[in-house]
Image (tube, rainbow, N blue to C red; front, side, top):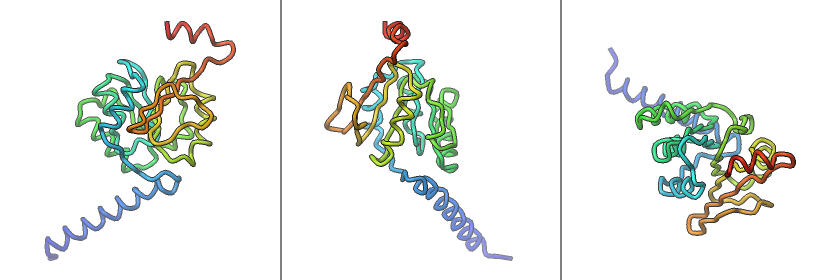
Length: 189
């Protein structure tokens, strides 16, 4: 019979190996997992003026802190988009533990493949290298009046509506598209 300590050590090593492998997956797509502080997330959501019932997308949601805070403190419906299966599992468990599981959806996919047309707010914390690829998707999918809040990078060529210079948070609002001015005005009035 094997020593119970040896079995525990082997199981621990296997769990660490699985965690290590699944933690590498986001890095292979070009986006390392870098969690931001809860205070900074809260400041970004407040700057975006998230209102109850709005739909908030977090692109590269990691451990789920943005969707959970958006649901718990702003009463939004939040959608986390994360490619790492391990982070998706952690996010789902975290949302349930915080009693906001019904308000939070975690999608395991590449955020470049997600339909963002229902988003009222898009939260993005990524490297500047991804901005060039993300920007046309946002411009093509987001409706007039939708807000984009970014941390640590600005959207080159877009004029921010507000900036928190201390925490390096930028807020943008999608302009009306030609022919959609009436819909845009109805939403903001």
